[in-house]
Image 1 (cartoon, rainbow, N blue to C red):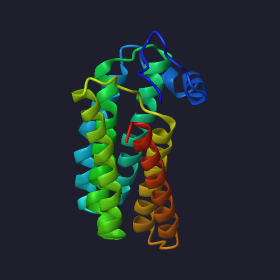
Image 2: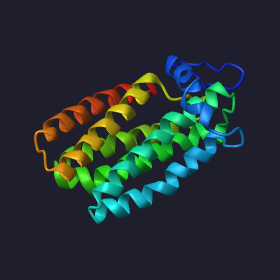
Image 3: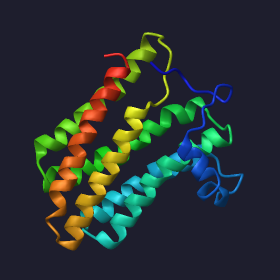
Image 4: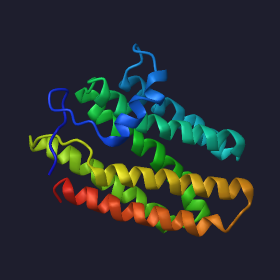
Length: 196
């Protein structure tokens, strides 16, 4: 099981190195990872608003931008050694707010209520497990690769479904469902590594 990553034992991953020499160079030094996490929380209601209005030309790019902040805040924290306990806790909460709310509002309607419920329930189980670990005074653990892959697959699956609805190309829907199904598997693996 992985432990809490801090600025003293930070591990920079291959994608962090790629981002360090590309996108992260464009982010000013006074922008911290926690700013991006807060931005994701702030953007979530706007994503839902435009989703509700079915303004796909605004909703899809806004959702992708909000999801991109998840990739950037972690890489920024690791490459600039700006890891904080607040960010370690808030980042997955912000992810669950973005993905979970879109799944409830959109995936439940477009695919299946039960399918959406499974996605949300597994996410809740992961969150509850983290809370239980804290209540038992067990060490807090950083996100693992299962969780990172799960989030990536969720973003791809939701984006594909949004684009399918926007473009009217129904052939993309099975790909979206398949991707979200694989994300559920990775979510369960992530949950298992958290101690269930």
